[in-house]
Image (cartoon, rainbow, N blue to C red; front, side, top):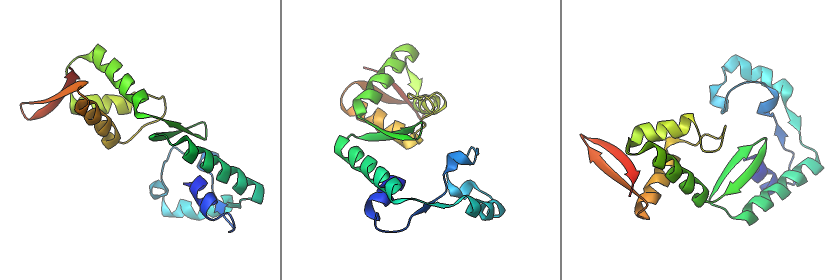
Length: 151
């Protein structure tokens, strides 16, 4: 989001608080207690023109990559296509066999395809359903529970 903001508002003053400097294990501001937010103001800093240009250029690179999925690793946005995840999902299903969809998605969130990059459950479900539409896997309902397996 910071990259996009720098791209859209490069002519404006942009101030930031970098989460990785806080040594907290939170992903959103709503996970911070109200009294802690006041302390965060002391960490706020205004981006320099060169920093904004760097973030803006990074955004342009991402847009030019034009891939379907993005994730952050070591503070850098990486783009990739669905096929990378599809192939990994198929590999995992080869070793697990038929499995409850809920358990499979939970397993993917606990042990993600890309270490330390956890997508929401709906992203994994989307990718799994996409594989089903391509005829690579089968989803069936057994005792009111969805199961997934290779075709």
